Length: 308
Image 1 (cartoon, rainbow, N blue to C red):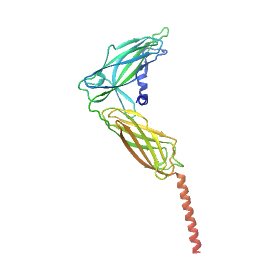
Image 2: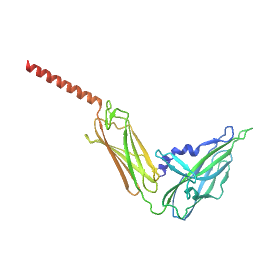
Image 3: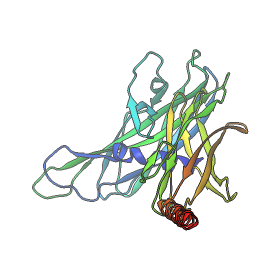
């Protein structure tokens, strides 16, 4: 599951690692990291939890680390948006700290306790909190007071015990290829070499799912089969996620192709969606047309000779 999150949260790396200069000038070697970056926790309503996050200052200057929490959610493309106490009982309010800031010396680390207190009215299912470590650092340049502000997030996936259910479906599957086509009838010159299959997976449950799956491509005329693995992604509840699979090593020649996508999630649950496309290479059409014209010409000459 952890490698799943590496993929899905690559899209937010710009947000959580973005740096902004708060004084003119250039800084040197500002960097830092937290561990663990992903935290899976299952708690009961009204319970308390203590988690320790380690911050590493790998720079050569002192860093002042400020702590705060925000909720997060993903969209159909996997991009993450953050919200701050948008509603009463928001899960970012569950998080508190002993201190709101820590001084971390160069090339050292510090364990920072993060307290999570779940209210008794918490809704069962998934709740998602980012704990941000906002870092400011004094630059080491002469005759200037330079600093950089950056932030790094540790993500908390909190499941609240209760009526947790898994329910997801492939709501649509689409075939895209840069070839002339009419509906599901494609007319490449020789064959379709590069194409993309896009699946939209909608999580209708009340907690996140770790989706796995595959795509099967079958030529109904020759029974030639090919299988591909769907990208593995974590999908939050109430969110549709677009999974795009690019294929460039399996040519689609003349024939009727049945393409079926299957996603697996939860406890041995799955959802399937399929469609059919027809591939008619233009060279085959040209050959058949030429052959037909030749037959017509031969028949015409034969009839003309018989009449003579």
